[in-house]
Each structure stands twice: as structure tokens, then as C-alpha cells.
Length: 360
Ligand code: SAM
Ligand code: SF4
Image (cartoon, rainbow, N blue to C red; front, top):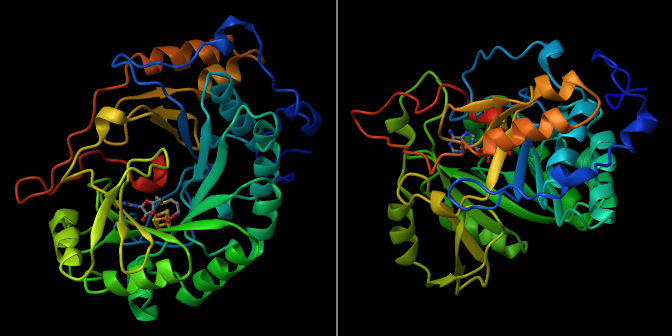
């Protein structure tokens, strides 16, 4: 049987061998340090480029997706993740596309959870649009997942449909209920969209904090051709923060989750509000993460085109020497940072790939 539950993927490993991907040797013991002295401790893995939504800032309405044959099997995803864990990655985030629409996803999660039990991983988590959470919340919690990010830009059902094109708000809200009932901590991520949800942040904030959830606002990033101008969508969070500060007391706090968000405590609600500001405030100097796509392409920076193919060394042999060498070589090329700009002169995507390819 394959981790994919016997679907179309090429069978590379019997299931029982997946548990045996433990790596020894000197290479496995070395941590990953980039040319700027940053230790790479966080891997985001896009397990599929497919999604059951078509959010306007993320995808064009008519997306063409990768042929299945190009996509890593779940055994290969497991092996790749485990290689990074052996090289010092302490936090693993599954993302996509929508990670919970990948067939057999729970088999992968259950398999990766062995690294939590062995304490090599501090956290296994995922970012989801919430549409499948009702179905998976309990199993995710049972597999050792403690916190998840759910993306939700509005609490207005019509707006939600307009933003996601295909999504249904009540399904996502039911998913959030199920996740909280299962004991998962939730952070809500909302992309700030000019003229769409910018009147809703106080409501979103009070709703999230009222349910014990953090809220993080994200600036739209210029990734991929989406069929409309970014300038129309882009709302600087410096502006949002200033507006919220007229209504609430926002106290800067040191809280960090290993991601790029800067947090404040909202005095009136007692909850945390995060800002991810790749455009108005660049956070690259503390970047500890890399991203791998569902085809095994490693991106050392979300905002740059440079990438390394890890599928080839992964498939070239059963041992991991070639894979480690490719990872080392790639990390030695990790750039200092990205240079996103959205203004009247820069309305083209900074990089051609969509966020759903590299994962958020
Ligand atoms: N489908 C899952 C979801 O929506 O949570 C996981 C993948 S999605 C690409 C991850 C995050 O990226 C989401 O919070 C989404 O809102 C965000 N995102 C997508 N495109 C973006 C863009 N162009 N700029 C900023 N954030 C974006
Ligand atoms: Fe799908 Fe997430 Fe992209 Fe929306 S943001 S289209 S839910 S991958």
C-alpha cells in the first residue's frame, strides 16, 4: 500500500518502510546555516498545488494544475521532510494549495508525527482554508497537532464567496467549531484587501479574540498572475494599524511563533493581533525558513525565483547522501531577502509562481 491510500501515484516504498527513514551519519547531524548565519529551523511543505477555493489574490479563476506524475508521492514527501528534520528543522508546516484536499493526507500526518514523539520536532502544524476541518479536526489533534492556522478574510457570507469564488463561509465556521472542540488552538489569518474587508477588521478582531483565537493580518504579496491589478487589492498594514489604534490600545509585545508576524496585545479584548508586512516592513533579516513544493522544488526565499530540484536526488537513490548534498548546496544560495514592491510602476508579479505553489 502507498501512503496515498493506493491512488494513482507511483509506488516507491512499501508502507512499513516509511517508518524506517531514519538517517545517521555525519551529514544528518549537521545543522543548516545559510551564508548570512541564519539557522534554517522551519520548513513549509506544499503537499498539493490544488485547492477547493479560488481566492482572488491567490489564484486565477482558470488555473491549470500540475500533472499527478510530477507530484511527489506521500512517501517521498515524508522522506524529504524527515531529511530536513535530520538536518535540524524543528518546525514543519503543511500547506498548499489546500493541504486537506490531498488524498491520504492523514497517513502523511500520522507518519510525520513520529518526529514529535522522538522530540526531534517541536511542532507539526498546517495552514488550511478550513473547508475540510470538520472532517479532520479530531484526527489532526490525535496525531499530535496542537495549533493550526485557518485563513478567513471576512465573516460576511457573500463577501466570502466573492473572495474565495468557490468557498462557503458556514462550512469554514463549522470547521473552526470542530477544531476548537477537538482542542486545537487556532490562529486566524486574514489578507487585508482594499475596499473589500478593510471595514471589517474590528469585527473580525473581536470575533477571533472572543473565541480565544489570535488574528494575523497579511499584506497582499505580488505572487503569480491573477488576472487583475495588485494595486487594486493592496492595503498597507501601516495604515490599518493606525486606524485600529484610533479605536483600541495596541501594546507591542515580544510574542513570536517562529513566523514573520509582529504582534500587539489589544488592551480592550486581551487578545493578540499580528501583522505580516512583507511590503511595508521587510522581515528578511530574521528569516529561518525555506519552502518546498509538492514537486520537490526547494525555494530558499518566497520572493525570489531561485530554486533547487530535490526530487532528482530524492529519486536517484535510496540513501540520502545526494539529497543532503543538494540541500546543502541550495542553502548556500539562500538570498539575503526579497524586494516586493507594489506601486503604479510595479504591478507585475515579483515572481511568476502563485502562492498556492510555494505555500503560505
Ligand atoms: N489553502 C490554505 C489556506 O488558504 O490557508 C493554505 C495555502 S494559502 C496559499 C496560505 C496563505 O497564503 C493563506 O492565508 C492565504 O490567504 C495567503 N495568500 C495567498 N495568496 C497570497 C498573496 N498573494 N499575498 C498574501 N497572502 C496570500
Ligand atoms: Fe486555495 Fe488557500 Fe489559495 Fe485560497 S489562499 S485559493 S484557499 S490555496
